[in-house]
Length: 451
Image (cartoon, rainbow, N blue to C red):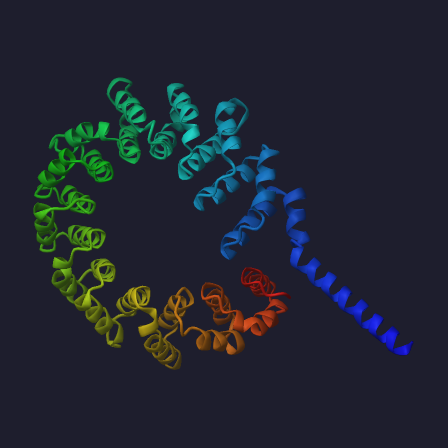
């Protein structure tokens, strides 16, 4: 009888523990739910900032419900921005309603709704956006032109119609000089071939405003087509350095001997933005012929941004010469922190298993010498990496690291599916720092670790 009671009591305890664990796993923090239900606009804003910092989306459904049932300008604007920045759908109907019922909404809400629809490329919003432009309400025009271009670009069936609408608006409706650039950008965003002749004419017009020519060049790179390439190449030798650099940057999506030659020649340009554009175009094209030029610029250019873009282009090309160059830049401790960090980032993106051990050596060296910015930079690179041999360094961070190391350690465990570190993650789930504990709980949930 006594044994039976013990067995029963043990089973009872196990059941209670399982129920408690299940409830903990399913529980969404009551404080945050209550903030969504009853909080002020200031409290909602603080919550949004916290969710941004955490990269969290587990409250999205509750936030969508809040948007549907409020007209508070600050809350709506904040949530449209929060969802838009992540290109997260779910608020389209409310955003369209804000446009169609704009007489009952604050201007700030309407603009935030328009921006959101563009960021999520809501093709269904095109009619509402056109109606808003047709109303000639200038306070909304800049944002609406851009949003319409992005939204139309997601709908292959409607891109030509939208491009023609925008060209007609530019040509026949006097949108004002402050809106012309946005219309040009919007035409490029549609990706429609219908817009190419119009954009090419603006780009090649030496009497046109520089800002409009630059916008047209950028749009031509998005629209493509041989006619667009001819216009871009004609601008590569422009006397204006800004037009020149924009033309080189626009060559990235194109191919051919003339394109290669123009990109390589641009590395010789004394205007630093043209050299940056050459590096960016080389990266987009993965132009192996550019590797010697990129190596020279990464080692010797006097403009840090040129060095950065050259290293990133080497990382995209990633042939043997490019990898050797980046390794030399990373391991040379006399180089600037900036050069070493960009090189390390590119090496880890291409071959993390090979370079992880070396990166850990340099990480420890930076810590020993109190080179805090360099240490934090290396730490971030490791934290975002995926490699087969990540378990040892991750365990070290989780067990012995400070707050930053533990946070990155959780990222590493999540990114590399390190279920073997479940005990360390469980320990952090009970940490006194609530932000770290919350992140540990999310990591455990993702990895299927029961708390």
